[in-house]
Length: 319
Image (cartoon, rainbow, N blue to C red; front, side):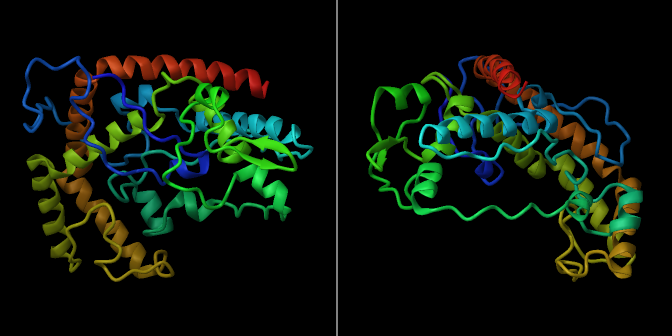
């Protein structure tokens, strides 16, 4: 089956597009008839705790934090070029490194972080608020973002190539045609979906979500979670969720760094160390990712090639 093209989304919406898609087995590059519902072999289980620096096979096909920062700036450049056609400008943000690593992939797993932040995400705790954006006039807003309400029955271009061939979803402002979704969408399409053969940027990420979801249901991870939960219970903490136990433990948004939360987080890490939960889960999740790569080799080869092309374009735009 050819690579699946999904609906492109703007950069600000990428993080929200995290629905698990059971895409494995879509490629014609199968894995020798392996039952996709079986639990893959994992080999030796590493002894691990802090998950911050863990690396996964699918990361080869997914932009890292630095690359996402570069893509963000490149998309802003393209958006600004579009706005200039209508007499406006769009502020291009300086290149930065977006948040995103594996520090909390399996919940809090760093003794240092637990002692300092409790159950608060270190990245969020240290992040600075974004500066307020200027108010936009009616026309400027329409040109930048397109129409607020779009008739879902009306087809819109799914690539820049398609957009240039048709007027799908386009609107008119002061006598000038504005692309569907405004300049923000045009910037997105030019960077992420320039041709009709472009693979949706969320495909490899969705593969990773799928692998993570399958690993959560794996019997080996379930056994490790049960052991971690029992360890926590011995110290008076009742929860079976090692990733987000805050609610079970009675901590809300305003109490994640209290002394009680810090104590619970430190015990959480101690139990993960005792049960090697991180090492087991990591090994299992990697195994699911490797199987997905084998089953979707053709699609992922295209993804890798397009990622390299996108990186070259972003470098040109931001140099």
